Length: 102
Image (cartoon, rainbow, N blue to C red; front, side):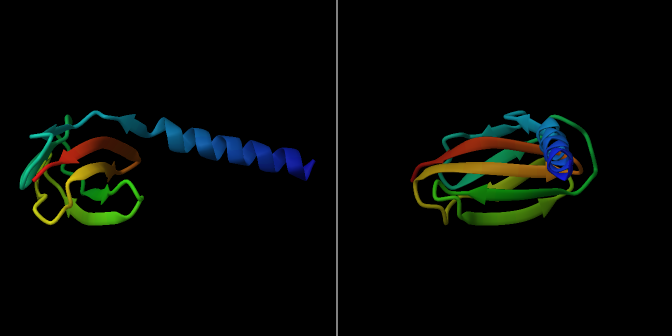
């Protein structure tokens, strides 16, 4: 009985997590980026957003917070390659891909 309850709790946890993921719903321009890029979220919320940039090795190369719907980010310290941007805003999680060229 406890095993079935545990599976139920896990299923509901994963459903709640994945219901809040909003895929590729923000704009990255320019993309590919050279020295700077701008991130634009589609909503007009003043809620603080947390941003993390991961390389293909799943290492965090940049973290930041912003409250506006636009964020300018320097890419000059990034190696050329593919990066993944994850933004959390309240219960919503946004993600997208960034290509950096130099």
